[in-house]
Length: 426
Image (cartoon, rainbow, N blue to C red):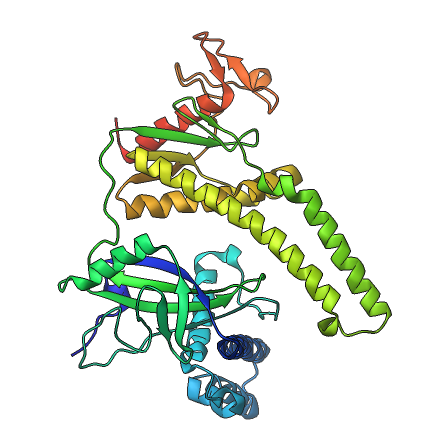
């Protein structure tokens, strides 16, 4: 019997777990990561050469044959293996090569959809590793979380292609929910693409794409509440209910420690180069790089935990959340705003609100922030000309209706009004 594709399932969910590979498994992960990166770079280079021949616009037989040969050598996984015999190593997963080819095609589709994303470029080798694989299911057997060559053996062990049995750790509460779905016979949970990665601190992870025709989480109870939020540089956000959430500023608090660690690493690199020592063999450099990576990772982890808690609270307690459209490209041109944008993680925060609203059947909308700060939410008067507010004006009084406003709270109320108008809510 045939199996449904991942795109045909009604609901999708991402599950990321930490894995603890053995030294042998770590070597296999490194080998597959190198294979995926090499294949991707080979396709990028080959297509650049084909594009160069195409720009010549010369109808010559040997050029036509050259283009045909270039296309044929990257056309399939088999062609790539024939060209690079080392890809036939038994530790290398064929799915990692196939996914590298698909990722190149996805990169071009993303470029045509959003030009700012840029064309596919060469992937440099660094301290991180990652590759993607897919499970195989027998046609005569049903799909399950516990079948196939990629599956869950129990609450603490996985089976992954090539890597075989491996220990993992994640949130047991969510894992038990997914297992409970699978135990109900009318609910099928399928594993899709699996991303295996190593971060800069040396920790290993496996990210699963799960698909099902039943929702993975239950919708939150109806509250009848609505809220608008205004993101600003004075604090993390101010909402239409008058609540102002302070900015945790995780990066700024650790900035000096990060600067000192980076300077120490730079000095060690310069010293090694003067002494003509290979950087890969300098243990003091690797030790300092690890210290810097752990500091950076700690800042990133704390920021993400804060954003997760805050976004979940907003979605859980409100039926409608309205926020301003974040114009990141314009803000990054200003150094002060760029630091605030990266330290606060506003773009990540808005993405979390968007996917959590879909997951829990809430409404989330973004609106054009134009004049939300300059408009009185009570009478609708817009401050213009000499009356226009500057960044220093944190409080102001409307010259028409005389209402006193706190700048950010007034903007949040206007954002909520715009959001309701955009959705047609009166």
